[in-house]
Image 1: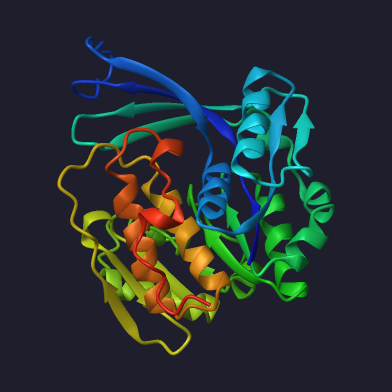
Image 2: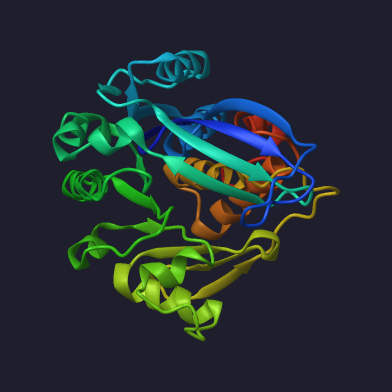
Length: 305
C-alpha cells in the first residue's frame, strides 16, 4: 500500500506547565522539550510505522531544524526526495501543555509559506502512484488545492485533514473523498459563526452534502461521528485509556491510521475503529513522534488484505 502526504514539517518547542499562563502572566515550574513535528510529517511517519510505503512533500529551511527532519524521514523509511528547501527558516511551533494533557500551539510557518502549486506539480507522479493522498492545511491554500486537484484528476483517493481550518474555495469540495475535521474545525469549514447552534450530527451532514464523500468528525474523548456517501451516520466510541498524558499528536495518529486502513480497502467504519485505537495510543505517551504507534501496538486491522 502506498500513501502520498502533502503537508507541513516543523520543530515543536514544548513547555509543560502547571497551568497555562493568562495575559501578561508568567508561570514558573515548567519543563522544556524539543522535537520534530508538523501535521504532514507526523502523518507520514505515522503511516510508515503502520506499514505503508510513504512519499512526502513539504518545505524546510536550510538550517539545523530542516536537517533534523531529513534525518527523521530516513530513520522512519519515509521517501522525502521531493522535499524542497526554501529561503526562510524551517517552521517552528511553540506548544504549551497543561497537566490535563490539553495543549495550545502557536506556529511560525517560515519555509512552508514558500510551498506553492508548482512544487506540488512535481509531486504528481507520487500522488498518482498512491492508494491514498493525505493533505493537511498548515501549508498555503494554493498547495492544498493543487494537491487535491491532482489527486482527483489522477484517480487517487483524497483525504483532507482540515487543520488548521479555514474556508475552502467552492470548487474544492468535490475533490475531497474523505474529510476529517474536529468539532472546532467543522463549523469554520462551513463558514458558521461561533454560536451556530448546530449539533454534531447536523455539522456532519452539511459537510457530507458538500463533498458527496465521507466525513469523519473527531470528538476527542467523545469518539467520532462518521457519515459516508450513503448518508448513514455511525457513532464510533473512543477507546478508554487509564491516563491522558499528551493530546498533541492524537489527531495525526488518527489520520495516519485511517489513511492506512483506507489504502487497504478496509470499510470506513472499521477504518474509524482502527484510527480510534491509534489516537488512544497516542494520548498515553508524551511527545508526538514517540507516541505514534507501530502496527504491532494496535489491534489487528479488521479485514486486513
